[in-house]
Image (tube, rainbow, N blue to C red):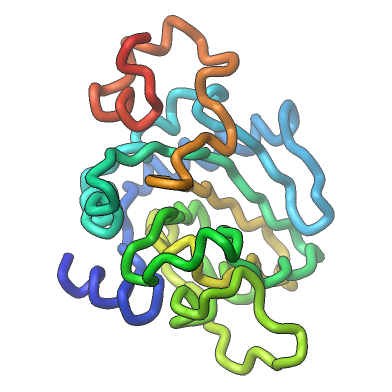
Length: 235
C-alpha cells in the first residue's frame, strides 16, 4: 500500500491490478448490459447508468472491497476524523464512435483550496474490460490534483495526458481534484466501467442518494461497513 499512497501523493492516481475475479467481472458486465436497456441514459459520449446501489446487489462488493477501501481511508480518513461515505456508484459505457470526454476535475475551485495532500473526494474506476486507449481508457493528467483548479486553463495545451491501462478487474483510484476524462472509443467494442465516488468533510453529501428506491429486502445483504458508507446503520 505504501507504493500506492506514494503514487496518489505524487501523481494523484494509482492502479490496483486485477482486484475483481474474472467471474465477478463477467457477472457485473452482464448486469450492466441488462441495466443499460432499462436505465441507460445517452449522454452523447457514453451511456450513463446512475445509482447502481439500488439497481442490483451484485455491485455491493465494490463498496468496501478490502483491497480498495483501506487505501481510500488512508488518504481521506484524517480529514476532521470523519468517516467516509460513498457519494455514488454509477457506470459509464463508452461505445465505438463515442468521443473523448472533456478533461475535468470533480471538485469546485472554492473547495480545492485545501492542501492537495488532504483530498475530500476520491474516485474509483472498476474496469470491466481491458482498459486500452483504443476503446476509451480513462485519461488523467498526473499531478493536476495540486493545481488548485477544477478545469485546465483554456489558454494552455495539455501535453502530458496518460491513459490508465490495465486488465479487466483492475481498479483506477484517483484524487477527485485530478483532471481526467474518458478517452474516445475508436475500437470495435464497448468499454464498460463502474465509477465509485467517496467523500468526506465539506463534500459529505450524496451525488445519487442510495436511500431512494433502495429495496428493503436488500438491507440484510449489506455488511456493517457497507451500511456505514451508505448511511444505513439505522435502516
